[in-house]
Figure: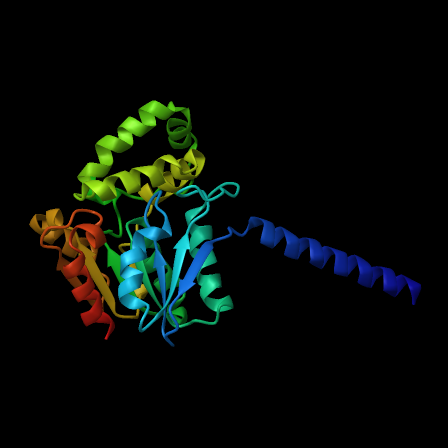
Length: 281
């Protein structure tokens, strides 16, 4: 009897350690919820950005929907948690939808968040009702190298080193050069730059490396829900390439902004809101 008791205690201890280990490895998402609609929308920001990038979008949607705005650990001043992993973040979003009991949810994602939205919809079809991709493609690397194939054993050490070794002044200067090519509104440029320079560099390096190795062109065939793909004005001249990128996504609508750069929700917000309203109704 005593022997069985010890066995039970050992099993209980092992199970507890396993649970603690799972929680230790699970990335903690920062979520802000507004609105009281029955249908929930999960909004995912892009690279280095705060969930506040969706602030005006939430103002448009919160009268009809419950809006769950995510900021990922290490982005825009939020505390970093260990070795950032894009797949773990996707799993964390899926777990959030499950634990909050908001499935099937609508997912709106910008940039990297758009790619994550597609991947989550493919892996967890019962959790997702609709997807809105805001200026993202299934395989970014293939835009520059049509022969690109993902590496199975990805080593992000060099990329992380580039991000972390850069002096603050140099990193700021780089952001000041890059961000104006992504958002036309000068006031918004400063906001986005503030987010990126306050992001954890190790996290940025790892996530950028992983996203650059991501190829969802085949995987999106598993997405069953309706999808709206909103792309910046500059991509309109490359429609053939966009159609190739999204060829395997069956139930989709692709639309091009009339003037917006990468941050369409800032540069062409009236058009963006009209597209959302039409798709979500």
